[in-house]
Length: 415
Image 1: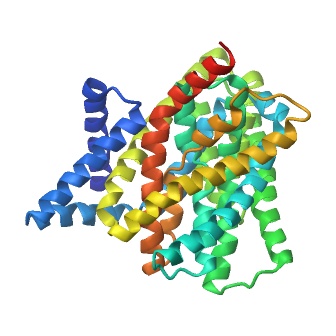
Image 2: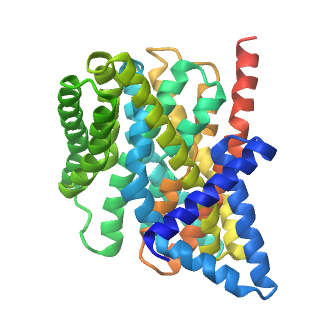
């Protein structure tokens, strides 16, 4: 199958699964289509066990052609991040900048080290011979909360506005920081570069700080262009050029594409929306990007559900995955709780904030994409299986129950 045929097949599957979910399951769209996709994958695996191997092999060959890592990290991610950032109030983020910055940087680094160290002992206890650097790599790819999954849940979770700003701000920025940490550790694990503070600091400046500055420049240029036209078709095209061209250029000059697009999206969604667009343009722009966000979200979660066809599981891996989940939640609780307790000396937080942020810190496609970027080998196979188990639990269990958790906490603290 060529690229167009593969894309057509995935879109068709997504449309069918969305219809089935809407008519019969009535779950949040992303979670519903992922569960249906997962169920179909399990049925295919079952058919393979019964001897119909050609069906499974055909599906596997199709998925191999898609390349989940490139599809998400070099394609869909920029659109989803821009769509998410476009509707976030910048003033809410600025008002909570210290807690967001501490969670998106210090929280990710703390979680990477702490979780990687604990899982090193777990892996050795279960007989997996993973060196410490690969355990830290695992910590770096699983620590950032996924903005795509998180923002989707926040839309239906009725989380208080003040807490929504913190969770969404953290999720939009910490994936960029997580990728930087992952890149540094990957270079060390591959032996490409020894650990040096100067190198780490330079890479962080290039990726994170450079991404912020480049994103601001992209937003400013786009704002100037939008201000000189009043045609929603042209304005939508300009924002598309910002997302696609800006992300590609950021990667080419070695700055963080995700951070650049988030900053540009915040700029256009706030300053650009207010001063560079007519009411008609705002309506069409919002409709377009909401539609783009919904479609790509559904496609992404269908791909996550199908990805199980390419993963090998064993009883030991399932055990490791089950053990890894509560450890990750404990580490998340610690990495959230410490900054909140420190900052709470100067400002108040929503009651139950630490619990909501812990349970609402979902992992998703970015973690799967990062682990798939590791070189083929036993280490990748082990980490891929465990990452997938964590992501499934995060999206299905945490995603479906966060609304209940928030409601219960609000009733308890604000009767």
